[in-house]
Length: 362
Image (cartoon, rainbow, N blue to C red; front, side, top):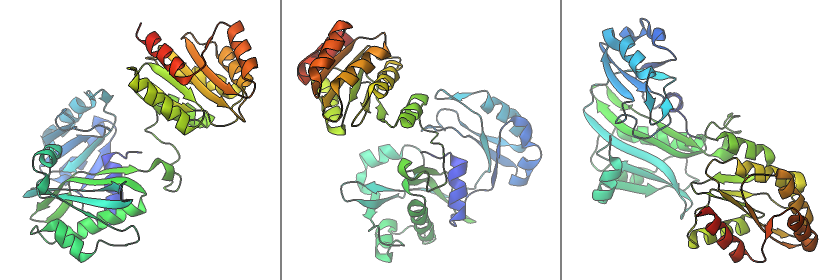
């Protein structure tokens, strides 16, 4: 789950990373006299979960006298389709130099990897693309509590030494927060020292409970419902709904759809032993996706009984066509139930996918 900037900065500050003085408002009136305590100019930053916020008009530099008026303007906006409900009001730093640092996971090596660049700010992706040597990187063994000095020297290479402790603190944030990404862009130097001018922190969904987070804000309502049902569920961008049992079979169905020229709308694994109610919930959940034009149900009957699956499909009664491939326990009874209720049941995975791709293309 991605934290908002002010939430990430609170954690950074608790780990000793300097951040600008600030406060959060939920309405323009809450600015009051607080802004004057931050200096003659302040930075108003929309707290929305989108990238490129500054370019999209989500950041306004304002003199204190105009702060309330500019806050009203920012609250009236949508930044990349997301309404502004909170604003971080922050002191304006006298920036001398901007840097970039992030820590994420190297999935191939199964170790945290630290990226550092002596040019931070916007368009860091372009820097990484056009001048990859500018991005220094080291991997850190997960058993280490701190970044070893020789790695720190390899990362920093001639930049101010006071940046080192900040990187080490960010590494502690990354480890202690069960993070998938901890990023400061830009990390800035000023005459007063080094500051995290921005902050990004993404917590591993699997560790939210350990971090004291009970609600994953990143989930859509359907993803939240899928979690309640106990489904493994991921939303995609296509128009063919997919329901399978077992991650391998479901992923194979997605791959075959792609190879056949279609686009899957989701991944949904109902798990083993799915009964009528569970299948019914799965079919209705997928049918609720606005783009879905056809649903593929591809299940192997082992512990799962094909007649239970067939009853669940019929009971769901969704408006989209449902094409089915069932094989295994009580297969013939499942076939009979589906046929009597006007559903397509095909013999192979290839047939069911081709049928769905054709239906989705109409």
